View 1 (tube, helix red, strand yellow):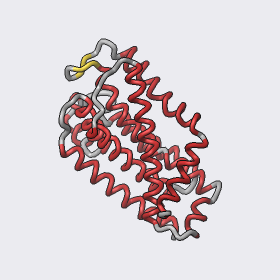
View 2 (cartoon, one colour):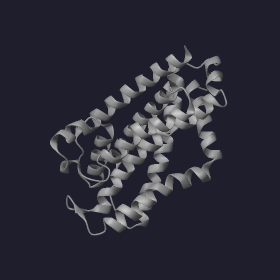
View 3 (cartoon, helix red, strand yellow):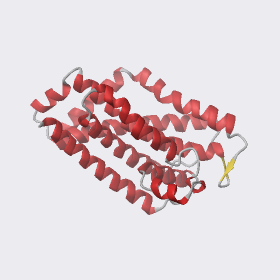
View 4 (tube, one colour):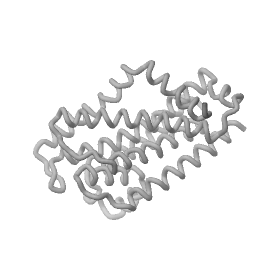
Length: 244
């Protein structure tokens, strides 16, 4: 068995053991967003020719791909600081690439499951959109990027308590400013220029275009691919630093 598959299967077995709790936790936030932002506040709003609920779903899917991908860092921290799993990984014949790739694929699996839950909830709410290959490509690239970033941050923090700081400074601002709940065109030009560098902005833009039956911009996918390579390389460096 390839080394990365061993790392991947370990994480999936842990996820499966907690499947009920994991699915419930993945469903509660999208459900609340749909009930509050979608149904209660946005029932009569129209954004770019679509109802606000239709506008919200692709952005919500992109946001979930960020939060679920990055949440991998929390589990790695627990395994690293409390169960010394990373010490065992260091002693095993597993390369840095295999470890990071296995963990990142596990995070991507969580992302796909979580976004499927969003799609199912949208269907139950009567929201009909197109979920073709380009929609899932945008979600997968964003999920891979932030799962890689999650691995990197898990290796760089000095304690499990520091993880909440990373979430507050990285995940929360991106989740609300990445074009998930409102169109970025309504912001000042300087703010749009800053938010252009957030991968989530491009994931939400590409997923929304695909969901509306349009062709996403190639530039959105190029920036997501660059983000994947950058964050994955950062994860490789962080693992090497943690092993030193």
